[in-house]
Figure (cartoon, rainbow, N blue to C red):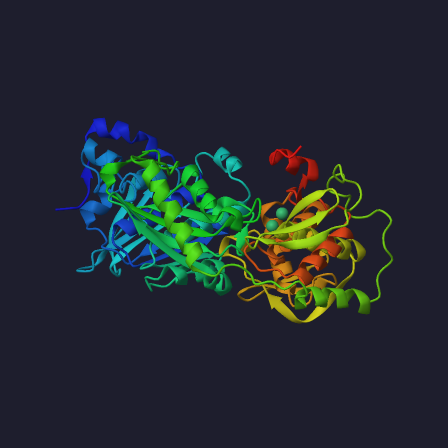
Length: 564
Ligand code: ZN
Ligand code: ZN
């Protein structure tokens, strides 16, 4: 008896919403979900022209017999869902059997499948009609080839974004499948070029290494936690490894990728002050829950789930992440005269400066606050390893040590950039970039040109991208970090002009490399910070716009103590 049943019509209507095949990524998603449902441990996706010409998914799963292979193309046949109840408590990934007829309605499909006992079966479907069924030699598993996608409705192609963006979407999709199925080996290639490959190690950091590179995988911390209803676990990036969008926060419920703004926000909240403003972590969060406690939105394009006890889930996520971040030493140790600063200063003195340009690359970010002159201050001490206390005739000053250090470094970077914006040099040893597989597909000619204008030259090599030329103002020892951050920011925000981009880079890197909260500062260091700040163009706010000083006047204090 076959594994696929036809659904009764009431149920058919319920899942009619599932018929949407809007773009290439949808097709790939449906086919990969089918492969996972068939218990495959190896799934190979290969595309021609980003899938516009051909999509092929080959798996080593259970395969189908002849009856099932033909039935698979019938509308509303499924092996997974049999009753309305099942539909609302979907434990499996998708609607196997539902996907194939929808795909066949807009393309030509060739299916080769075998259960491994005897020969395989090959079914060709065109115009939603079975054109041929024949016996062929085949190994255990299923291979589905989709071509001439949307040939009936060429207008659909208009709605597809550029092929590059479609491809990036597919890379992201396969990345998500791989993160939630570390025991399955995935491969993805386009025009015979491998874009992503994972191995069946069962180990999520290995998958992270395949997607984001080894460096990033090493910056991951595990976390986990449970309540009566939920179990959560996963990996999160240390606060120094951040991105400019939320798209690398991957959420899964029972191994199924979902989107949930509230849970994303909970994760970001758990990082709290450890994250720079407008920067986001890389997170894989796997939620396990009894399917009875969730409602899966049946529209397959939405990936949304309604949780009962959402608040307790949010609290669990928050606590698990918070404690993972607390247990580890994630703070950068800091010395005011760290080698990084010395190097930069040396860089200034030793090299011939290009004439300073009259039209500075940057205007001051905000007008100097009410206070126009920098106060003369005496150091008193440090409060909670985070605030530095100063005094003068007028009152008591509290300085946020991170904000102060950040401002000083930020202005130094800006000065560097302004001085030598067109000045760059060739690297003897090119830098190999650590970019994720989906970022890689988004590096195109336009982006390469923009980078060149900023002094960064890149070249495509066998397995990735190399940086061959960089501007002089990249601090020594941090060349790859600067190049990488610049390229990633540009990928995330293509519209950004040079000025905006460099400013973002200066803010990000100054934040990352500056003295953090919870670090001891002695009086010498405190005075160095103060004098550095006094030379700044805008010594009263950090580059993110937060205040550096809070002042309590003598009068205010006297009022508080009811002395006046
Ligand atoms: Zn900061
Ligand atoms: Zn700041």
